[in-house]
Length: 526
Image (cartoon, rainbow, N blue to C red; front, side):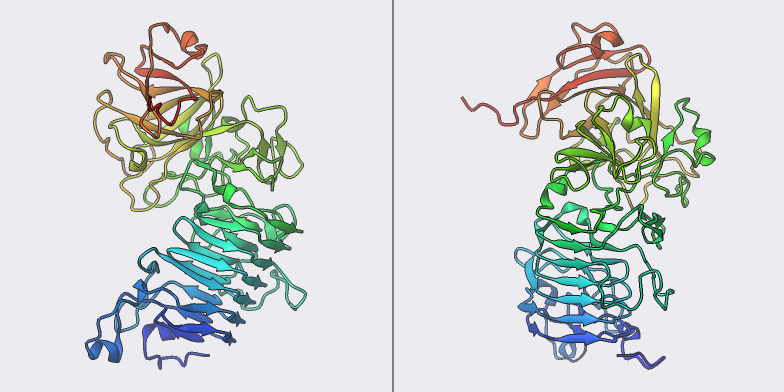
């Protein structure tokens, strides 16, 4: 299938598909699409009809209908992706736009036992509701094999992923036509922000970082993320400060495959708090993404600082993987921590596996009180890691958001028993400045995740005027409130050494909060 220049009927015909499927309520079984200039099988489910149907007055929303049957189809040798469920037509001219296919009433549908191989822009691309993808086989595609976006409770089950089969005359480092979004670093599946169960899959030959040019980390073609070869692509874990969704990734059989590259998080700042080093010291640990980027100036979003490894794919089961070997994360680390794979803790190839427990700090709202889903303040923030004597060990910085429409994901990962201090308005280099949402000292709130055990604890200094008396309360998910006391704290040492939740207001506009877990998440009904 080829496009004759200037003779396309619709805009989407400029890269024509083997099968253009506009209505999901059909039986699509046992078809084959190969040698296609565009997409092999394109599920383009619009929210309206076009052409003769529209002219006849038919009112219909195809995107609300469930896929009837889509199974045992094959796409290979496509210049774009092999199969796509995304980018439907939005007008009579045939312009397309990213839209999510979420059929009514529950957003669920199934596509089974499809095969995709040797496609130049990846295997399967989707932006959908709650799919179940059973028994797929994907091989020899450039870049990623299955990728896109789903809602929670999606399922990718029983799939076979092959990075490079024996039925391939070219390695991924020697593919002709490299100008077509060439991505030699092979990854089997996107993380989907862990909204999908990726279970009981087999991955072969995703060799990963440290195994040659094919695995060297690089910034993606669109300039957003740093990725490298490996089975699961973890380069876009920006949603939460701590990635816990790996528990959904059960039953992986990895054959000659790295489970996935842990993209490093934001820049580390020198302990002397000299922010001017940000634009000159590229040797400090960071993810490789430019520290100064676009009109917003310095980085105004970040990635997860740690990832849980419950199944032991990267290291001992139940450990946490620290992506970045910065002192912010590694200070006072367990003696059982190991580099991934074997190597030095100061310069690991793919992060550090440690039994130390990590927590998430998000919804950072120093000016107003809000729910955990309200997001963080737009102003620039720096979180200092402090030693037991009060000295700064290392700091992480997030620049002014400047009301950007992308990436309001501003958060930090905290280590159990760590000491931290939050500072505001630390970005003096951006071309814009985000206004504060209100004055400090009226109300503030912060969300803490994964710190529910009685052994979970940390100390953090938060902005609060010394002249304003504070009340501090810890609220659990189910509404159990615990009010902290400052009756026995008269110094930093007192609150640091407290064996129970407490707080202390110092004279430098900080309130130090000692947090302990163990709050009963379910209130006693008696």
